[in-house]
Length: 433
Image (tube, rainbow, N blue to C red):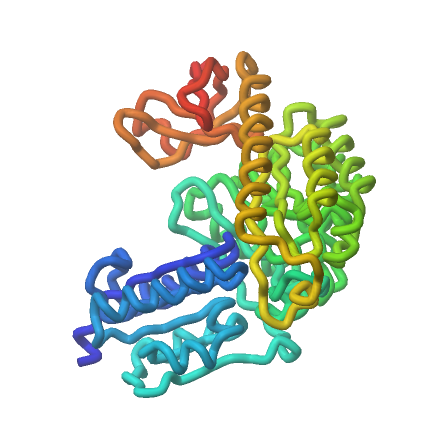
């Protein structure tokens, strides 16, 4: 029977780090001559890389397991990721999966590819978060133009609403030399852009005595790598040196994603965040001072336990005052074993929805104004392989999505363009120069 197993399907939820790790896991199967099929197709193996950042992520993780079992009840079902790490007993009791691999055990999936068994009770291979010492290197290769490169894992911050430290353990990283080796592997495949990914990448160097600045400098020296971006970085770890480096280095794209989470200092303290609104404002103004057209996205949680209407109004006033380009917002979801469970008052579901709509409206306005302000200006675009109708798409260095008449010769090319107008609310048209 083993010789007949040739198909494997993957389903990934959550962060870009998960996508990088799924891509790496998929190469375990490709090496063994498996064919990768879509998740809604019949397969002999289904690998679900789960997420548990919200209750909705938990639900999606459960649904994906049910879907795989429905398509092929005889398939080998493998569940990994944060939901698998934090809810092992729930999966064990509820679903007919065969293997549960914890967040820090993904590398061990390769061991059972040709040595598997169907299990009435799943084999569970996990590591307690306090014992997570190793680093699972990962990078994506599914896209011809860009790759997500994992440089760091885990988090030491223990924010009051978050379970990530319990799922992924403490902060740790590969040495710079090994990361650069992986980056060269990516570039050798013809990929021109790398997105630096991790859980708390600004904390890079905890296990090797190196600095994030050293990593950035080393990446910029790689021949053939034309662009790189930071996936997300905490404001207290975004140093002036990094900002100045970004402003002067041609390979570093003027694009930042910085978690805010709340615009109320009272709530930030309750969340156990490591900064206040004064520091956050300074970072935004510093970036805009040296890179006026930089894209700045922020994260925001609405409706966390303890957030009163007055606190929310402080957030609204604060984000309205910031020169930002986009707000990635989501409604607070209670997580087991977090301090925020006990905070009062509790925000109702209706209040969360109302507050979420307010922030969405602000975000839409900020993003529209950012796009409008850039019309008429010239940038460089890396065109991607995605085709929709007769259009090809790409992103400027400052992360504006653009479209142009489809031309396959533009794929994976960096081209100078002039932004000419709106194609829709999120995309601009261009003239190639």
